[in-house]
Image (cartoon, rainbow, N blue to C red):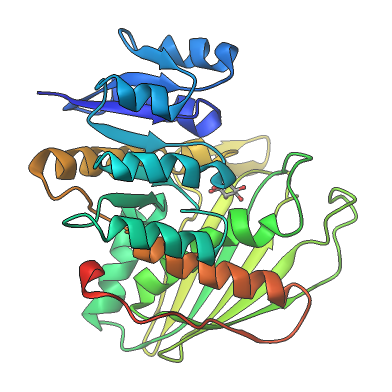
Length: 335
Ligand code: ISE
């Protein structure tokens, strides 16, 4: 039986996931779309033949039309969907962030722990990117000696007007706060933010780019260039510095072209294409895990809570200082 997924939120990511589940994922269908904006709902439903439309999660849950929930609303609307979906005992894939802050993430953890096992996977899709996975394997193998540093570049062509200064951390560097500890096998200990010269082409209300510096518990030092007005394209790249070598991921790849005295390679312009394969792998493996009864394969709500703490340190660091991340001890439930 195909897994019947209710997709909550039919904005950019929700609509992308609806099309993905229908066209590229096996073993699952979109059975419901929960979206208060009827225009968005109708547009997304074109890629989900036979799906039912709802304007609230409560209405959808009352019908027995879904076996699992994919939450793709903005982060501040996650908690009011997570709570009833957990109480209904449904498996959940929740887009990042889990919730906007660590206190609400903690509340979600308490509700989830009433169930027999973790039911929430958080949509940190970089863990499903083949190059990130290869780098993680290289680090774990020790073939290049110990990892010393990670140099990360996270570049967006532009951001919408609604994008605020804090979102440099909570919407963007949020990904590094998840993937870096996963790569390096060590949690974030401190976060610091440095401000280079401001890009005069940035939206007026933003002071960016920023340089985020993290120290991990194991002593690895990480720097992230967070830059959201680069114009030329969308680029997420990492250089890993080891005792005996260097490794790089996220370089432009594909067709190389020589023309008019120039050499060029295409670059992405959006995360929806840069991480398309990662999103596909993330959803397929989640569907497989739910159908197999393991429910989660990837970042859990505990990871979402740790990331929320790192984001809080990062937001404090926007105003200066070296900020510490203090996590509670990991419950056995999330072992
Ligand atoms: C966006 O919300 C994402 O999740 C992208 O992966 C990130 O690159 C971008 O900066 C965010 O705004």
